[in-house]
Structures are given as structure tokens and as C-alpha cells.
Length: 206
Length: 195
Image (cartoon, rainbow over all chains, first blue to last red; front, top):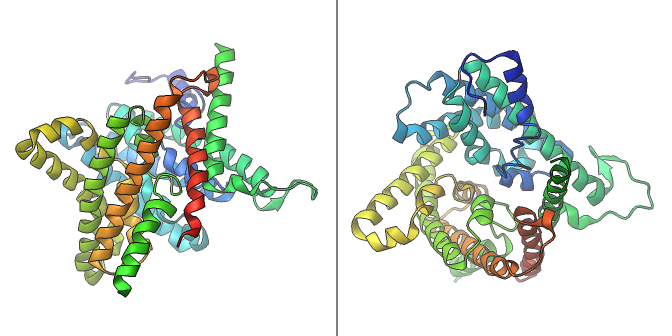
């Protein structure tokens, strides 16, 4: 975590990149597992979910950063949660209005962004201590890292589970889809093996 | 008779077939974090069952008696999360005052429950499944909690045995837990035919 209040350009880039790999919310910090597992049966819902999280993360980080000097310690978490709930409602209504089919598919997992630990964790660890610009950059890095992770997971599951990507046939016709990967089993197994893979890579690097 | 039948099938469905952890992926964080020892897992399960029954009932009441008649469904999420947070606070204060020994054994689990997505998830699912009687809401929320307890206790049992096994290094910790959860969820899929 960078805590430099002035913040040089290099500091910003470091924060931005931290979310992508070094502090990747899913692979490294194991945060936000529920949506990670639930919406990754295909790439499209995963991407929508990721963008919703980016929106909520940026907005709530801005708000929390603005009111960081007014926060009382014992009411902190409640204030964070209420701020997040407001922005999640906005995102949910937006999805219902413009992407009704997708909203139906994601179901209760959009409102469940409220209790997504990533957002509370970022509000607590970054936005409540840093000025606005730093908070936005941190939110962007974390959000994009989360979205990318969702897309990788969803890509693997959709490709092997149905032989398609973005609902377009990719695999040759002779390929027999492993339907189990689109079911709950597939979510747990794919994430488990991906985590093991990430562990393996980071071990080799160090 | 009809109501009893609906209640029983609803209960079985939420405990086994639509198990919140293994098919809806709710409450995965405590599931991975607390399932190391079976007594801790059981304590967590009990605390979750208690708060889930309470907040499931309360949010159903608020949804049907306040929000729907007034047309304030837009504020549903904000209201639900407020209700859950205050229910947890109340339970914590009540236990500390009247059952200190129970409070000590719950320890840090109670405050953690506020951010447990299983609770909010169940409240939202009650709404989605179109639960239309108070009794049904109570039974389904208790069932959700019991389902969570069953899943986390099975997992804790398996993980206690996993400690004696030589797991490949990259798989240690979260990966092997997730893979075990996957196999468990495969087993729970077998319940799909019982209703």
C-alpha cells in the first residue's frame, strides 16, 4: 500500500498496477469469492459483473475519500456499507433498465456486490486514508484486476464447458463440451486449479 | 396439509438442493476461512443460523409491511443491509449482557456475520422465490442457516483430515479447499432428484 499523501506519478502507476497482479483481489487476497464463482459460467455476465464492480468501487471510493475526515471509528463500517448500497442500487436499476436480460441472469448477485469484501476492504485500506485522486486510481486498478480475473475464469469455463466464447462457436465440432464446468462444480474446480497455477508462477518468479 | 407439504419441500430444498454455499456460492469467505476446525465451524454455523433466521424474518416483514405498500422497493437493498447490521448488533449486545458464556464462545464470529453474503443473499432469495407467507419465510431462513452449518461442518471434517495428507505445494491452502468444495458440490447435486 502506498500512503504518500502527495503522490508522484510513479506512485500512481504502482498503485494502478498493484491491483492487476501483486495485490490481485481474487488470486492474491482471496476477496470477493461469491461473484467470482457465481457469474463466471460465461464471459458476458462475468464482464457485466466486473464493470458493475468497477463502477461501484470507483464511486464509493470517491465518496469515502470525500468524507474521510468526518468518519467516526465505530460507525465507519456502517457508513461504508450504506454508501456502497446506494451505488449498487444505482447500478442495479441501470442494468434493469438497459440490459434487462442480463439483469435477470445475474439475479441477486448484483445486489450482493454490497457485501463484496473487495469494496469494503478498499474503502477501509485506501479511500479512508487517501485523497480523491489516489482513491480513484486504486479503485481503477483493483476493479480492472477483478474484472480481468473474472473474464479469465469465465473464459476457461465457457470455452471448455460449451466450446464457445462470447456465445460464438470456437472449438471444432468434434470437441465434446465438458458440461460439468458450467455447473457449480466447475466453478470451484476451475478456481482451485487457477489459484494453484498462480501460486506455481509466483513461486518460480521469486 | 398443503401448507405443511410446501413447508417441508421448501425446507429440504433450501438445506440440500439449493444449499447456499455449494450451489449458490454464498458465504464462501467464512467457508474458506473458518472451516479449519470442526468446533469453530459449528460455532460459526450456529451463529449464522441464528442471525439468518432473525434477519430473514425481519427483512420479509419490512419488505411486505413497509416497502411494498409504500412503493419504496428502490430502497430495498439499503434497508436490508441496515436491518442485518442492526440485527447483528442487537444480538451481540443481548448475548453479552444475558449469556456471557455463549458470547465468549461465539467470539469474533458475530461481527463478521454482517458482511457474510449468505445472510443478505438469503434475504434477496426470499424475495426472488416469491415467498408469500411469514411462516414460509421463517422456515426457509432457518433452513438456509442449517444448510450452511451442514456444509461448513462437512468441510471442516475433511480439512482436519487433509492436514495429515501430503498436498502438492502449489495446491496447499485455498486451492485444495476449493477443489474439495467442488467435489462436495458434485455430491450435493445428487440430492436434486429427491423432490
